[in-house]
Image (tube, helix red, strand yellow):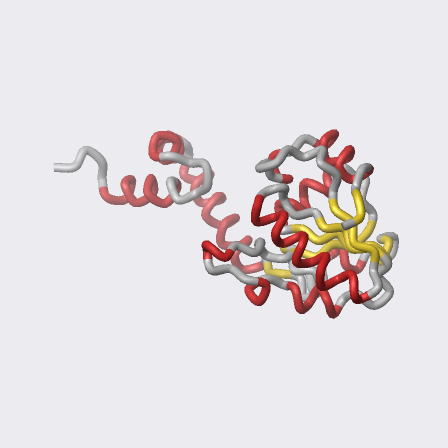
Length: 197
């Protein structure tokens, strides 16, 4: 005989699939929802469904958006001559929080990782190359991991012949760290100290 009803076990299993959420935390979340008013659970469920229905990738930069193209791509105050390449939307959000970068972005959708079977063709590299008209500098802001470095070197190799300056975030972000978890001061320092590749 199981101690918990199947519906509670299913919810705990669902929560435990979230990154950084273990079984204990998932169980606490499920019990919180059991104890709280029904309206909170309904509101949460509606928010999840609304997000899944309305949010999509921008056709230009591949950031998440409810509009097409996204607000950053259509912002006339953004500098169109500099393009910042990031791994995913969470990295873009981390850079945006600093208010230091005023160019445009390109979200790769991951990094080159041969061990995981991810190559350049699995990323948004072709659409990056299509966006180079009028761009003077491409700032590569992949995470300072082995895969991020491999991706940065690959991008530098294919971008340099296109006549654009290729730069990389400075080493203010620790090796193995993620932009998503870096504080704003560290990201500002890395932006200011970027170097050419």
